[in-house]
Image (cartoon, rainbow, N blue to C red; front, side):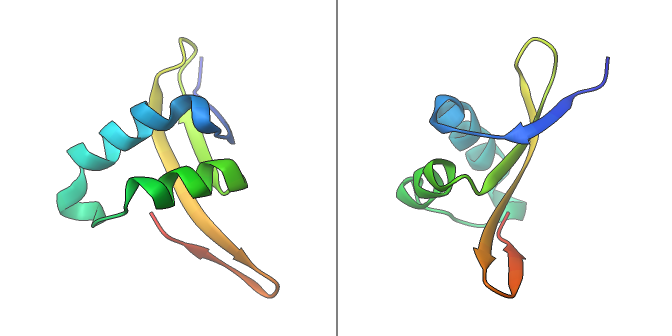
Length: 71
């Protein structure tokens, strides 16, 4: 079965933070506080496998006239 995509919440914080640290050479730095703020604000989409493993994410910021991809 294909991974599902949905809005992520604080329950995946540690898993997402770990993924960001493992890939920091290509992603750049994002403070933990900023990551948590995006999760609480509903601006992180994630792809999970059937067993709940996070396999990808898209962190973004919303503006009245545009959306900016952050990670």
